Image (tube, rainbow, N blue to C red; front, side, top):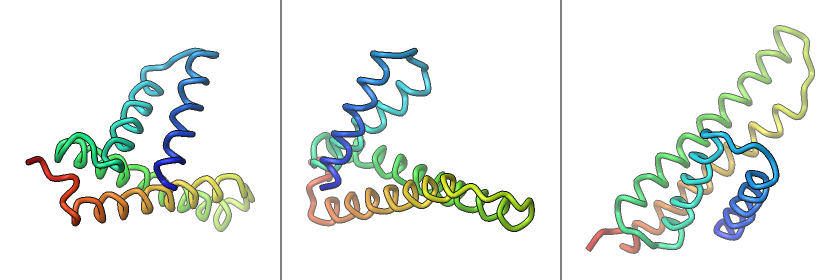
Length: 114
């Protein structure tokens, strides 16, 4: 299911990149997503797995950061932006689910370089 989500995100990202301006950051983001998808599928060995774990941890930290920023704005600046907390929680859960899938794959020996 997680692999299907990655395929959809990558497809949407490629479509968006082809129909609008392509930024370097967008290309790097898509490359990390493709590498992480390969790691989830058990393709590419240990190096791909490590990159996938780094990417998933980055997404998890970004999600927690976005949620914390929303809490700061809500409590101290009296701003109510529900979109920010939904995006933050979504990113955090996506990063967490990805990391757990990658650790499960590696524990089965699929991600090991042999």
